[in-house]
Length: 93
Image (tube, rainbow, N blue to C red; front, top):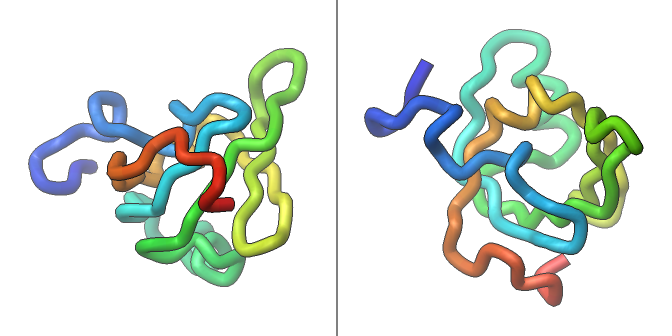
């Protein structure tokens, strides 16, 4: 799957955020029940997301989204593209 000609591996995605970094959601590259669940959790275009931690093995990672902390597996977070404008601006979240 791709958006605007970019594969998820090459694009700036949620899995690439390090603890303390934040960015805005750009697009979701998932369909079906997972897409609905992510939208229900507040992962919509323009929402600010901050990585607040990673497990010792690096998967899953915890993200602060609209005041709630959720954990996502790397495979799922790689399918969430980010708007790189303001990446790392921790004051957003």
